[in-house]
Image (cartoon, rainbow, N blue to C red; front, side):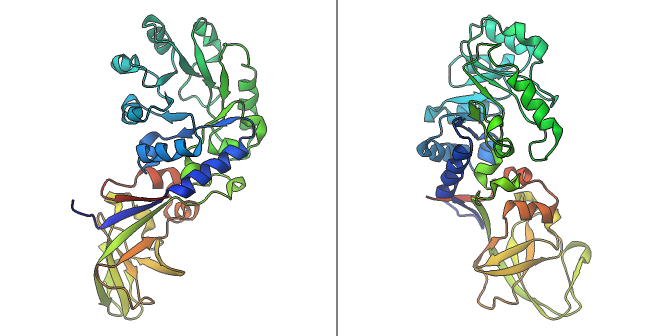
Length: 341
């Protein structure tokens, strides 16, 4: 098998530790895991295996194709986007539960005799979910988990409490066995938001949407191979549109990485690589497949060596202008994903 000039170092022990941290913060509530978008870009099957081994018993995906990919693991999975006509044949095999979001989905599931389901109620986000007025439609359904979703949990705003109170008012009205509201940031809002089940996503993978989650650690580190080392003379420029000019003769490593791999143009002249404790600045524009790194302080680096990108999510988000979610889920298929546990 041909190896790639890109690799993603993935720390399975840290992934499990992050889940344990979030589970402890969830108090008496069970702690699940959102593994949609292929495990936030890290590989859903590998992520789910490790979280199941750590004790996770509830997994959430967006689509039935994502549920099918996890089916061989035999884990309890919920499909957050519900069930379309096109999904029914697969849904009725029992590989996952739908989270019913619309009156049409409720009718479709009921008509098919689909059995246990989850239900999403909109408490103010105005995205997916039935309204409170639709509760009579749920009569007779076997509902495992009643869910809603916080719109602004990463901010200290009054809307959080309004949504929590609206959701709490639904207790006992649907026959649901459990209630679930909090995502990663919602867990950090405190025990009143945990209900019976929390559904972290971003924080599992090293994202920190709120300061209270400071114990969360980075799981994914992109690494790229040096294709060329060269000296750029003083006064010469690097990359498209010549946005960086060498103030003096500068040693530069050209790496096989770019926005086609999810390393965005927002890192132009702001990103960096790391070599041990050294920070090596990115010079010039990020292009589709290539970036340039200042390696003047690292004379030992040569063609064929590897460099780790500085990719701690909160800081990388601030530098690039991309959300922490985008930075994870956009990491491309050209990376070899290498797990350590």
